[in-house]
Image (cartoon, rainbow, N blue to C red; front, top):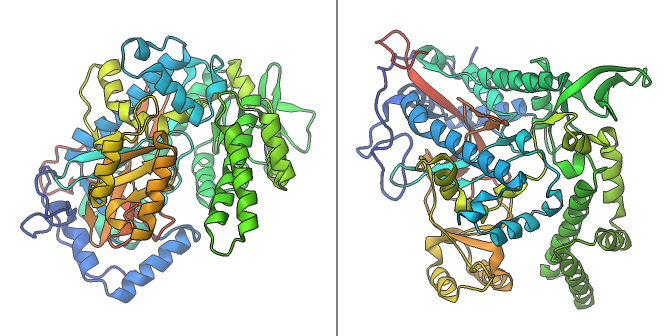
Length: 567
């Protein structure tokens, strides 16, 4: 018996309104309008949720955690967007942003850099961002006409109900393996919802993306393969593997029967029981992981791996020095080591050998050795892509567009390349330093005198790392954050504090996952969502009491009236 099949549901009337009209107080309420009435698209879902006991909600969370194999829990309340709103704003807005980013990357990697001549982004700013991402050594090596990447901007709804992009996420992104599971689990527990109104199913996105990969593989005269290697961050990797295997994409891991081999003629599959016999030619490789981890054989990837290891060591030592238990002599030793690493890391030309020597000397050499072993499978893959012998769904040298300083220019890129006004705009954002790296003291004072009105972010932070939400910053943290900004103002931006919309007691965002190809972009019809308790740290991050939230696109009730959304 289904625990959550609590009562019969009356069919909702067709929905033809915009949810953008009504906000409530200092935040937008996703479920209730300004008069306290349930928005029409939430009628059935909120009836179910409101009749659940606390025990039933707890049981749902426990069962969902099992379904996600312990990775995350799924909130029992789905977020529901109308098809009208999604099709008129979110979907075209993300498509527009993705197309502008692809146009920029093609312009950049072709060497033309017309954005610089037109005054859209100064060349020195782009170079600084690329160096921060340690991708400067890819210059001149990337086939501009083969640019491709997964893209998942994080989007919120502000207090006025307007959608805002808060972050661009290219490349190896989270959520790709969870959209279908979140939807399937929720609708399995609440079948009444599927009976009450039409929703868009996640399967279509994976079907279309798999076909796009296969078509590109055929252009190179081969098959499409998904390649991944441990360690895996969580079980989402396993879900991604199954999603694409079910759609005819060959899966290669260190433990699979089929393996990859890069030859002068191209990339091939072989059966590891007959390693001397090559079978299918590989035309396209779907990479589930970072370049510097998947193929260390390329010098640029290896350089990025060494830099990443050095940065992690610096973070570890800095955290150790912040501990009250660390002896003064140890703190002094750590400080000297941190300074030595940072001097190397700040060089325009990274001395890889010197960094590697310091890493080995400090006893972290096992990190390098583990990486070399893990990436043995794909030796030569990056070079094969650069030589146009195989296609990749994740082009090297594109990660820097996820930098939070680069984010400042994306609206201008849309205007420049597409000749259009941005459909979804950024949150108002400013740098703590000018283009020459000099601190803006007026801005610093204004922000720290009114910290509750701002959010401070490190430009290259990921996954909620190095983000401080003004109203949530403690007095103890304030001085530390100020010192960090003062030490390197170029690495920090500040945004107006924008209260996220709420779904019951959770603040929520949405990630609209898109497959960006060399010629076009394909946007999902089933976004991925997250939620965090409103009394948390203000960051929607699954690692900090967060939950996944199923996002349903409501296309209207079955059979009640003529549905303008039927395709």
